[in-house]
Image 1 (cartoon, rainbow over the protein chains, first blue to last red):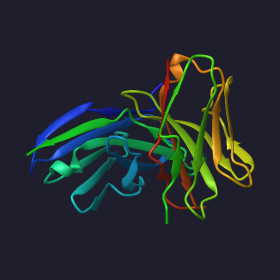
Image 2 (cartoon, each protein chain N blue to C red):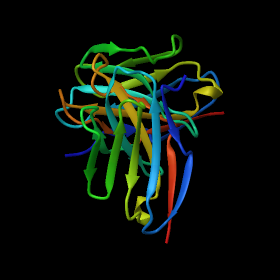
Image 3 (cartoon, each protein chain N blue to C red):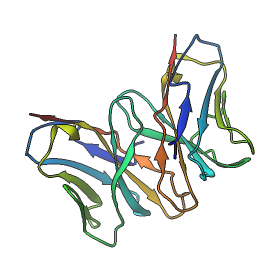
Image 4 (cartoon, one colour):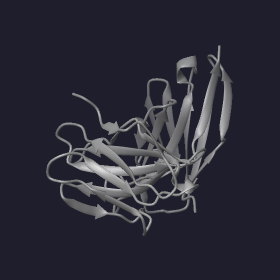
Length: 114
Length: 112
């Protein structure tokens, strides 16, 4: 049972465009929501993370939007670049789980065309 | 400061053999996690260890799988009597007490 549902499965965007990836969850005990970026043959790397006490967090071209009432959060990649082509995973964890024990979404493969 | 080191990067086993995957956490990190990634799926938590202790193994299959993190040396994920369904990428991650989780590059197991 997937506790964090991620969509779309794949995404093609032109250079300079906006990539949007959505995640939804059911467990209201989740209180930490990171996004990971994974390149082929590599391990996931933390991109940006948010806690539910804020509705938006921005780091450079990457923004997380968080809607607590809808139990949804999304990643926006502004001015997408070919180097952003990767698989992106959303994740969630609770206070009672150990720090580092995450429920991951299934991933979104993003391809940025030149 | 070297990252999380996993070896082997690729491992091929026949059904019924044993697979041993090793993980050396980043220097100063005493918390180790193992995750499994099946093709076209996200990562699934398997086990969380601190030195000499298994803290949370709620994601580990009940049979054939075991993990350890001895006082000296790397953490080991051991899969006995492998089956085709064990074919996956196995990722190790480590952290300090409250720090960010860093992942290794994974060990890709193929069971023939």
